[in-house]
Length: 191
Ligand SMILES: Cc1cc2nc3c(=O)[nH]c(=O)nc-3n(C[C@H](O)[C@H](O)[C@H](O)COP(=O)(O)O)c2cc1C
Image 1 (cartoon, rainbow, N blue to C red):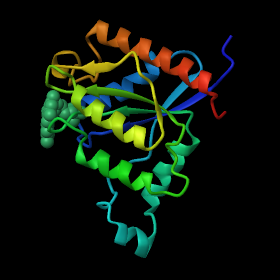
Image 2 (image 1 turned 120 degrees about the horizontal axis):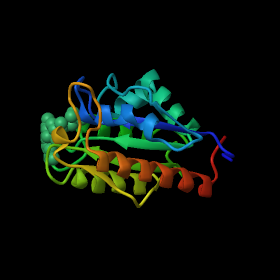
Image 3 (image 1 turned 30 degrees about the vertical axis):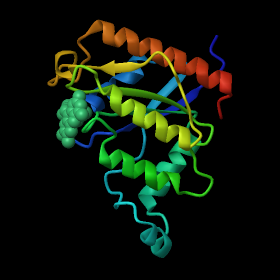
Image 4 (image 1 turned 120 degrees about the vertical axis):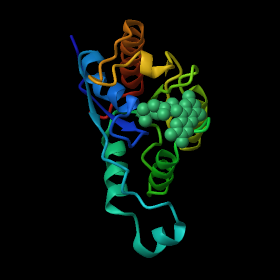
């Protein structure tokens, strides 16, 4: 018997239409345990570059407020992101920087899980270490294991259909989502 409805949002670190990380994100509802709803977070593609002067003169842009409120309202946040130059893609880091300046910043105590798909063999592992560090500073609670690194992603995901064709990858994701549900419940979901 499922006692909870867990409202989980995903933040995709890639902006491109044919993104493998977006394909993984779109596959998550079909791999989630009972009681976990997974939806996409409001977009960060229109965020200006973070500039404290802009924040001071004009406040937080509405798109920043929308993402911050969605993070605040969620029981958990999943990042689906590629690795750019061994680290966090600039657009995603910029989004985190904006949200981190919102009063009562919403990542405090927030359960977070990380997933990455990359064409390199390490599957975005170096990006995840940097993202974990950013989440530490924001006092988010990032799930330790299982980890999801989808290396050589173009061989495991069908670029035409968006389907995860590698069954082992799908199994790992199911396991992580199940562990994430337990992690959220242990910490006490919001709903
Ligand atoms: C600016 C840039 C930097 C990249 N750096 C890395 C990297 O450090 N490690 C890696 O595995 N792949 C790297 N790649 C290749 C990405 O893994 C590949 O483009 C992947 O498909 C991007 O994710 P997406 O399909 O979700 O957009 C880089 C790609 C770009 C555009």
